[in-house]
Amino acid sequence: MVIGTKGMGQYNRMCSFLEDNGIVLADTTVLDAFAGDGSFRSLEYMDRVKHVTAWDTNWEKLLDLGRNVGDSERIEPQCVDSIHQMEEHQLEQDRKWDVIILDNPCALYGGEEYCEHFEILQNAFFCRNTKKTNALVFNVTPTPHKWNNRREHHIRRTVYYDDVRAELPEISMRGHYRFYFGNWGGTIKECLYIKHKHSGLEAGYYWVAVYVFEASRT
Ligand SMILES: C[S@@+](CC[C@H](N)C(=O)[O-])C[C@H]1O[C@@H](n2cnc3c(N)ncnc32)[C@H](O)[C@@H]1O
Image 1 (cartoon, rainbow, N blue to C red):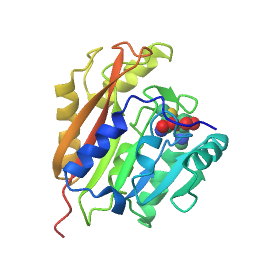
Image 2: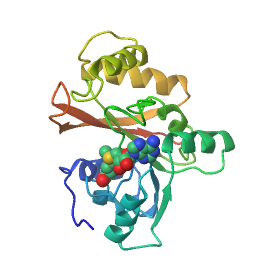
Image 3: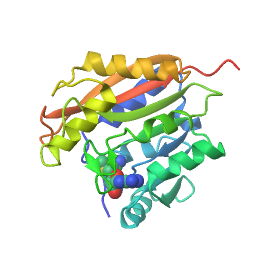
């Protein structure tokens, strides 16, 4: 059991940003697709929102998360592979969330089947509740992970971003997501990139990208 977070306040800043942009946290449902035990930073927001669906592949971590939050009404832990689960939800259109958080590894994972948020982001985009102002939060790194399969990671990034540079600047990342979200039919209200230092990455940091979207008019 873990009390408190090792994170450095990124989700506290996220909470202020969401509230400043019209998302009333106490009335908000969240899907946290890489929830873990919450000790890295998810605990920073969990006691402020109405309900959290918490996905992770590690059941032990989810049990710890339940103990850490201590409010079984608020948290709904599910031991699933988030990439598959998000795809099913998107296809079935059975449930939507006001805020979707992807605290995705900034690396290759799942036996190198997955890379960062590349396989989940589009499906997550379509699982947002667009009846009200909503948000999508995910980790964006300018460089590959040092101790992972760096060459394979770089190749996957080159294809995803259509950019061969070893280090991608924030402005390129913002341009990339603005283009994709626009193509998928989203209207960005505001976005915030919060820097997080991380020695495991070539660049030594990544960003927690917070995108707030307007409610849909239809
Ligand atoms: C960066 S940690 C999340 C930290 C967490 N948000 C917190 O505040 O403690 C990434 C998490 O992703 C989980 N994970 C890895 N692959 C996954 C997958 N395919 N589906 C769901 N969870 C996965 C890991 O078990 C790990 O807990």
